[in-house]
Length: 113
Length: 111
Picture 1: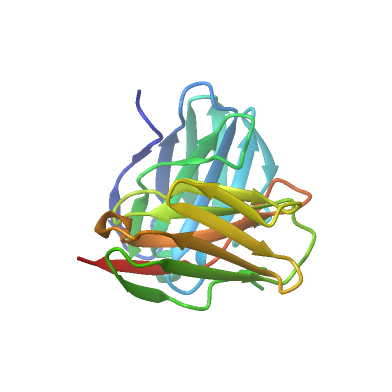
Picture 2: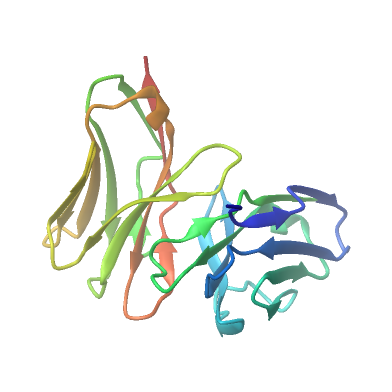
Protein backbone atom coordinates (compact mmCIF):
# COMPACT_ATOMS: atom_id res chain seq x y z
CA UNK A 1 0.00 0.00 0.00
CA UNK A 2 1.49 3.33 -1.04
CA UNK A 3 2.21 5.87 1.62
CA UNK A 4 1.98 9.62 1.28
CA UNK A 5 3.46 10.66 -2.05
CA UNK A 6 5.14 14.01 -2.58
CA UNK A 7 6.54 15.55 -5.71
CA UNK A 8 9.00 16.74 -6.63
CA UNK A 9 11.54 15.32 -4.17
CA UNK A 10 13.94 18.15 -4.91
CA UNK A 11 13.30 21.59 -6.33
CA UNK A 12 15.86 24.25 -7.11
CA UNK A 13 14.56 27.57 -8.31
CA UNK A 14 15.51 31.20 -8.49
CA UNK A 15 14.17 33.94 -6.30
CA UNK A 16 10.92 35.36 -7.62
CA UNK A 17 9.79 32.19 -9.33
CA UNK A 18 6.60 30.34 -8.50
CA UNK A 19 6.98 26.98 -6.80
CA UNK A 20 4.28 24.32 -6.54
CA UNK A 21 4.66 21.33 -4.26
CA UNK A 22 2.31 18.38 -4.60
CA UNK A 23 0.97 15.78 -2.23
CA UNK A 24 -1.13 12.66 -2.55
CA UNK A 25 -2.35 11.48 0.86
CA UNK A 26 -3.01 7.90 1.83
CA UNK A 27 -6.32 6.79 0.37
CA UNK A 28 -9.17 7.15 2.84
CA UNK A 29 -7.40 9.54 5.18
CA UNK A 30 -9.46 12.57 6.13
CA UNK A 31 -6.74 14.87 7.49
CA UNK A 32 -3.92 16.40 5.50
CA UNK A 33 -1.10 18.51 6.94
CA UNK A 34 1.66 20.62 5.40
CA UNK A 35 4.84 21.14 7.43
CA UNK A 36 8.11 22.96 6.88
CA UNK A 37 11.38 21.86 8.46
CA UNK A 38 14.32 24.20 8.96
CA UNK A 39 17.37 24.02 11.18
CA UNK A 40 16.36 27.16 13.04
CA UNK A 41 12.69 26.45 13.65
CA UNK A 42 12.45 22.69 13.44
CA UNK A 43 9.19 21.21 12.17
CA UNK A 44 6.44 23.79 11.78
CA UNK A 45 2.83 23.13 10.86
CA UNK A 46 1.79 25.44 8.02
CA UNK A 47 -1.81 24.41 7.37
CA UNK A 48 -4.09 21.45 7.74
CA UNK A 49 -7.24 20.23 6.02
CA UNK A 50 -10.09 18.06 7.19
CA UNK A 51 -12.23 16.47 4.48
CA UNK A 52 -10.61 18.79 1.91
CA UNK A 53 -11.52 21.92 3.88
CA UNK A 54 -8.75 24.14 5.28
CA UNK A 55 -9.19 24.22 9.05
CA UNK A 56 -6.25 26.27 10.27
CA UNK A 57 -3.74 28.17 8.18
CA UNK A 58 -2.30 30.26 10.99
CA UNK A 59 1.09 28.68 10.41
CA UNK A 60 1.35 29.94 6.85
CA UNK A 61 4.18 32.48 7.01
CA UNK A 62 2.74 35.09 4.71
CA UNK A 63 0.52 35.75 1.72
CA UNK A 64 3.11 34.37 -0.66
CA UNK A 65 2.10 30.92 0.56
CA UNK A 66 -1.16 29.27 -0.44
CA UNK A 67 -2.49 25.72 -0.21
CA UNK A 68 -5.38 23.96 -1.86
CA UNK A 69 -7.01 20.58 -1.65
CA UNK A 70 -9.36 20.24 -4.63
CA UNK A 71 -10.20 16.63 -3.80
CA UNK A 72 -9.47 13.94 -1.26
CA UNK A 73 -6.49 12.60 -3.14
CA UNK A 74 -4.52 15.72 -3.99
CA UNK A 75 -3.16 18.86 -2.39
CA UNK A 76 -0.79 21.60 -3.46
CA UNK A 77 1.34 24.13 -1.62
CA UNK A 78 2.30 27.11 -3.71
CA UNK A 79 4.86 29.81 -3.05
CA UNK A 80 4.69 32.89 -5.25
CA UNK A 81 7.07 34.63 -5.43
CA UNK A 82 9.67 32.43 -3.80
CA UNK A 83 12.50 33.84 -1.68
CA UNK A 84 15.79 32.35 -0.45
CA UNK A 85 14.44 32.16 3.11
CA UNK A 86 11.80 29.73 1.89
CA UNK A 87 14.52 27.13 1.41
CA UNK A 88 13.56 24.17 3.59
CA UNK A 89 12.18 20.66 3.49
CA UNK A 90 8.42 20.63 3.09
CA UNK A 91 6.50 17.63 4.37
CA UNK A 92 2.97 16.54 3.72
CA UNK A 93 1.28 14.18 6.17
CA UNK A 94 -2.11 12.52 6.37
CA UNK A 95 -4.10 10.78 9.06
CA UNK A 96 -7.42 9.04 9.57
CA UNK A 97 -9.57 10.32 12.42
CA UNK A 98 -6.87 10.13 15.03
CA UNK A 99 -4.65 13.00 13.93
CA UNK A 100 -1.99 12.01 16.46
CA UNK A 101 -0.78 9.18 14.26
CA UNK A 102 0.22 11.08 11.17
CA UNK A 103 1.86 9.44 8.20
CA UNK A 104 4.46 11.66 6.61
CA UNK A 105 5.63 11.75 3.02
CA UNK A 106 9.34 11.75 2.18
CA UNK A 107 9.40 15.52 1.83
CA UNK A 108 10.37 18.01 -0.86
CA UNK A 109 13.71 19.73 -0.44
CA UNK A 110 13.31 23.26 -1.80
CA UNK A 111 16.28 25.46 -2.56
CA UNK A 112 15.64 29.04 -3.63
CA UNK A 113 18.72 30.73 -5.03
CA UNK B 1 7.67 31.02 20.64
CA UNK B 2 8.22 27.30 20.92
CA UNK B 3 5.96 25.63 23.44
CA UNK B 4 7.99 22.43 23.32
CA UNK B 5 11.75 22.66 23.53
CA UNK B 6 14.42 20.09 22.87
CA UNK B 7 17.56 21.71 24.24
CA UNK B 8 19.99 19.02 23.15
CA UNK B 9 20.55 19.06 19.39
CA UNK B 10 22.48 15.80 19.52
CA UNK B 11 23.17 12.75 21.66
CA UNK B 12 25.75 10.00 21.26
CA UNK B 13 25.29 6.62 22.96
CA UNK B 14 27.02 3.26 22.91
CA UNK B 15 25.06 0.30 21.59
CA UNK B 16 23.34 -1.59 24.40
CA UNK B 17 23.22 1.40 26.72
CA UNK B 18 20.24 3.59 27.51
CA UNK B 19 19.37 6.62 25.39
CA UNK B 20 17.47 9.41 27.13
CA UNK B 21 15.97 12.15 25.00
CA UNK B 22 14.47 15.14 26.75
CA UNK B 23 11.80 17.69 26.02
CA UNK B 24 10.50 20.63 28.08
CA UNK B 25 7.20 22.39 27.60
CA UNK B 26 5.87 25.74 28.71
CA UNK B 27 2.10 25.37 28.59
CA UNK B 28 0.16 22.88 30.69
CA UNK B 29 -2.97 22.81 28.54
CA UNK B 30 -2.01 19.72 26.62
CA UNK B 31 -3.87 16.51 26.00
CA UNK B 32 -1.15 14.44 24.44
CA UNK B 33 2.57 14.37 23.99
CA UNK B 34 4.13 12.45 21.14
CA UNK B 35 7.50 11.32 19.89
CA UNK B 36 8.33 11.00 16.21
CA UNK B 37 11.44 9.46 14.68
CA UNK B 38 13.00 10.64 11.43
CA UNK B 39 15.63 8.98 9.26
CA UNK B 40 17.54 11.02 6.65
CA UNK B 41 15.64 11.62 3.41
CA UNK B 42 12.44 10.25 4.94
CA UNK B 43 9.47 11.80 6.67
CA UNK B 44 8.98 11.50 10.43
CA UNK B 45 7.22 8.40 11.70
CA UNK B 46 5.09 8.21 14.81
CA UNK B 47 6.84 6.38 17.64
CA UNK B 48 4.94 6.65 20.90
CA UNK B 49 2.54 8.97 22.70
CA UNK B 50 1.40 9.68 26.23
CA UNK B 51 -1.77 11.22 27.58
CA UNK B 52 -1.41 14.08 30.01
CA UNK B 53 -3.31 12.04 32.62
CA UNK B 54 -0.53 9.44 32.70
CA UNK B 55 3.08 9.61 33.79
CA UNK B 56 4.46 6.65 31.86
CA UNK B 57 3.82 4.75 28.65
CA UNK B 58 5.86 1.81 27.45
CA UNK B 59 6.16 0.10 24.06
CA UNK B 60 8.89 -2.48 23.79
CA UNK B 61 12.27 -0.81 24.11
CA UNK B 62 10.68 2.64 24.19
CA UNK B 63 9.29 4.30 27.30
CA UNK B 64 8.02 7.84 27.59
CA UNK B 65 7.89 9.56 30.97
CA UNK B 66 5.87 12.67 31.76
CA UNK B 67 6.76 14.81 34.76
CA UNK B 68 3.97 17.35 34.95
CA UNK B 69 5.35 19.27 37.92
CA UNK B 70 8.61 19.84 36.07
CA UNK B 71 6.87 20.22 32.68
CA UNK B 72 9.30 17.69 31.33
CA UNK B 73 8.94 14.79 28.91
CA UNK B 74 11.56 12.15 28.24
CA UNK B 75 11.98 9.18 25.92
CA UNK B 76 14.05 6.23 27.09
CA UNK B 77 15.37 3.66 24.64
CA UNK B 78 16.72 0.51 26.26
CA UNK B 79 18.82 -1.11 24.96
CA UNK B 80 19.90 1.28 22.24
CA UNK B 81 20.63 -0.17 18.81
CA UNK B 82 22.48 1.32 15.82
CA UNK B 83 19.18 1.31 13.91
CA UNK B 84 17.82 3.77 16.46
CA UNK B 85 20.15 6.42 15.05
CA UNK B 86 17.80 9.12 13.81
CA UNK B 87 16.38 12.52 14.67
CA UNK B 88 13.71 12.41 17.37
CA UNK B 89 11.02 15.06 17.62
CA UNK B 90 8.75 15.60 20.60
CA UNK B 91 5.37 17.17 19.97
CA UNK B 92 2.35 18.24 21.92
CA UNK B 93 -1.31 18.77 21.30
CA UNK B 94 -3.69 20.95 23.19
CA UNK B 95 -7.32 21.85 22.85
CA UNK B 96 -7.08 22.28 19.10
CA UNK B 97 -5.73 19.70 16.70
CA UNK B 98 -2.67 21.74 15.88
CA UNK B 99 0.45 19.78 16.81
CA UNK B 100 3.57 21.67 17.83
CA UNK B 101 6.95 20.05 17.37
CA UNK B 102 10.31 20.62 18.97
CA UNK B 103 13.42 21.22 16.89
CA UNK B 104 14.57 17.64 17.20
CA UNK B 105 17.49 15.76 18.78
CA UNK B 106 19.85 13.76 16.62
CA UNK B 107 20.65 10.40 18.25
CA UNK B 108 23.73 8.46 17.19
CA UNK B 109 24.14 4.95 18.53
CA UNK B 110 27.68 3.64 18.10
CA UNK B 111 28.24 -0.10 17.57
